[in-house]
Amino acid sequence: MFDLRYHVASLAAVFLALVIGIVVGVGISGSVSSGEKSLEKQRIARLEGQLAATAKAAADLKRRQASSQDFLDEAYPVVMADRLKDRRVAVVYVGAESARMRALVNRTLTDAGARPVVRVRALKVPVDPEAVDNALLARPTISQYVGNEQLRPLGRALAQELVTGGETPLWDGLAGELVDQQLGGLTNPVDGVVVVRSADPQTGPSAQFLRGLYSGLAGSGVPAVGVEATNSKPTAVRSFAENGLSSVDDLDLPEGRFALALLLAGAQSGRYGVKPSASSGLLPPVPPGPATGG
Image 1 (cartoon, one colour):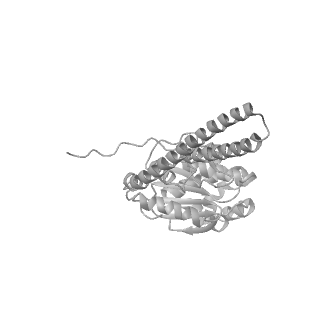
Image 2 (cartoon, helix red, strand yellow; image 1 turned 180 degrees about the vertical axis):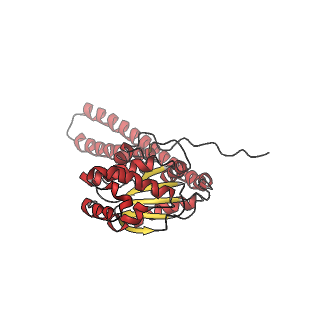
Image 3 (tube, one colour; image 1 turned 45 degrees about the vertical axis):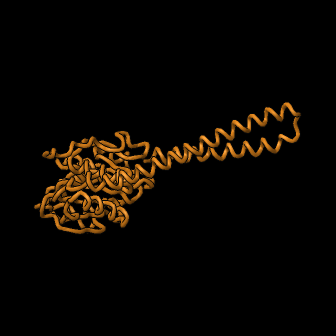
């Protein structure tokens, strides 16, 4: 889809350049000799022919783009149907919950037949290490995570609790220090996790904590995917990838929502989307659909 748009834009630029060339040619033709005028007329004729060919190519590309969009609109519901049937998904926001990203994630899950998001945790960043240590010290059973050098292990342990549910002493003890917004309990396990970074990139202790959280989610035994929109800046793809998370950088496009559904269903991990950082391509390999009887 994006290749066609870029081709149309390029052809439009060529179209404009040819028009300017013709106008300039006509303007100077009155001040040259008859022989030169003849050559100029030939040149103008060639330009007019190129202009007509360019206009036809642009029109053809526009028709192809419209046809591709029609195909995508028709195919999207079919390829998404029941892709995540009855799966339970958690969402983690690094920073405040984003209304736009919430709508895009929810649409993906609905289109793919998953259950509504079972739990959401929007994390306060930057992390306040002193407040976290004080909360840990108040609970001897989790006090082994006191100290900045324990922030990465703490992030990994919180990731595991988020996925497996059940007893969650760390989330229980640190909610006041780490959680900005939350939805849903932590009783049941989940089948996948979506990560959205709505805050700016973090440094220092906060970065250490997030590295632990991301790597813990990546190693939790269920699919974990970092997502963003095509216009998200700065991109979080590199941070996701460095810590083992798959990523989708175009959740605002049908292709991106399909990629997320595939990844949450267990497709090959990687960096997917339309940005230069999408080193794995637009989509994960799509498994064949179920065979139908004749």
